[in-house]
Image (cartoon, rainbow, N blue to C red; front, side, top):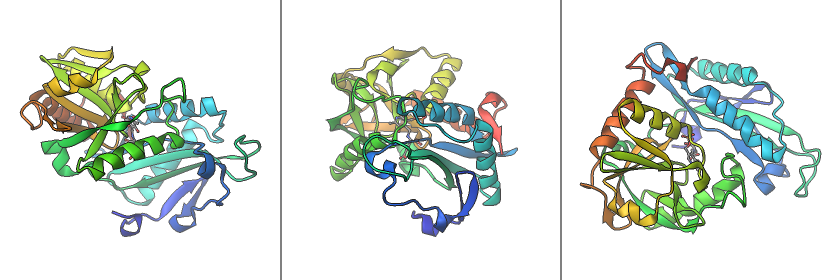
Length: 309
Ligand code: PPE
């Protein structure tokens, strides 16, 4: 669904609330030319106590951390960004939404060096349903191992959520969709499993859970972290510092993606290979159900993960 069909009218930019249509930048903005922006994607869920931002502090921490390799300095504090976000959600009367903060080198001069380009910051919120479709959450998706590899973390910091990195995600995702798959799995430079274009990956084998470690060229996903904690609290053994070879995808009992946008999405086929029974697997379902019970406020546990709007 396009923004024009949504009932949203305000964006926060550099300290001010501006009309949606006025949230513009110059075409000579540094980030537009060199991908020099860092961003976040978080969700605000509808709960009994009203809209609640899920793991908001962790998203803000990651946003500020992503700035570091690029020597980018966000002009506002955590508190200002939090106040702005809550205000955006309240003003537009959203019960639930996706939240997209972005910081980027703006307009001043061009040339790869950002020089005196200002660091600009914006936050937008809008309703965003299931990332890969409602059906995907229930029945799982078909994915393709991409012919594109992920950047090595020696080439670019893959733990920073940098806008420029996402051309790799776009190539992989679109290649998959052109070939009739819903999403891609991207291997790292060594040929082991890294993650999805916008998701982390989990594998279930013999009742235990595995996910590629942080040195496998992945984003340190906040949903990944939540799912590791949820799975351990449910009594599962989770191996979160492993390498996963491509072949292990085929022999997995279950596979699923996690992400703020993708939430917990089962995978039912990889290339031409059916995973498990070709449906959402039982452990995936248990974790997914628990995840939605938590984010939609049907349990009192994990209160520390919520920031009420
Ligand atoms: N890996 C990548 C490359 C990634 O972009 C995301 C989030 C994740 C893993 C999961 O991280 P986390 O959201 O903290 O659990 N991708 C964001 C962008 C999606 C988009 O299409 O834009 C997101 O989920 O918001």
